[in-house]
Image 1 (tube, rainbow, N blue to C red):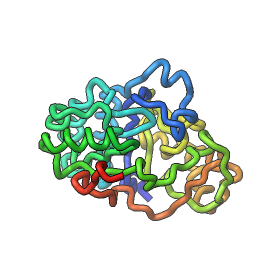
Image 2 (cartoon, one colour; image 1 turned 45 degrees about the vertical axis):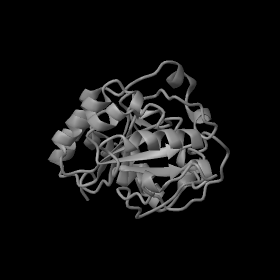
Image 3 (cartoon, helix red, strand yellow; image 1 turned 90 degrees about the horizontal axis):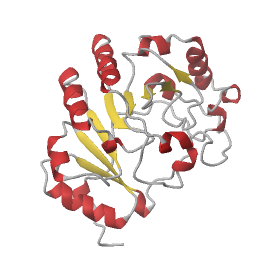
Image 4 (cartoon, helix red, strand yellow; image 1 turned 30 degrees about the vertical axis):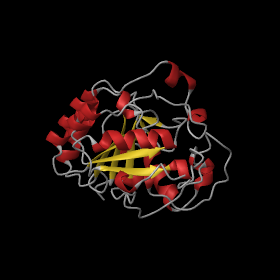
Length: 255
């Protein structure tokens, strides 16, 4: 199987910095990453995109991560160049909305924006901003403020969890590149337990990566760190499809 061709989602962790210190996220982030912010080098992103082109990648690109992507100083440039290299692939931005402005929204070259709403005031502010921009039909919302979604344990980094030992294809279907330029187990590995440097091909051919992928599908998580502490497990998920409602359908005046 050509693993790169069969990828569904490539996630770029643009920034280790964040505008917030949420209890369901921050405890799992190594302290030094917050105190000494790192921003993913655009050159690494573009080189990865070229590798995806060569391997006929048909999935999605996500600008997201363990920090707030809009803090990256070259965010607009990155979005424009990714769409130039991969014009047929969907480019999605995840954000908490704190730094969204009309100008930023207008200049971003993304196909979709997923707004993670954690409180009513920010929800109202972001909606007002979106309505003044050219991205009105491209912003969708995960309304955490209403408790719509349960947060996972971040592979045991935030709270102690019992391994569900269900099969998981995350390591075969989605990849996560940190702001430091390391490939890690997956987006749930907040402690960055496993790291790989180099190209996608180098990572997929690494013996440890192969071992982990195979044992996740058996499944045999007990021999895998941090997977043995993870409460997430799924197979066959279409990582390119998000079912969140349009921000236009969200009303934070009604509590």
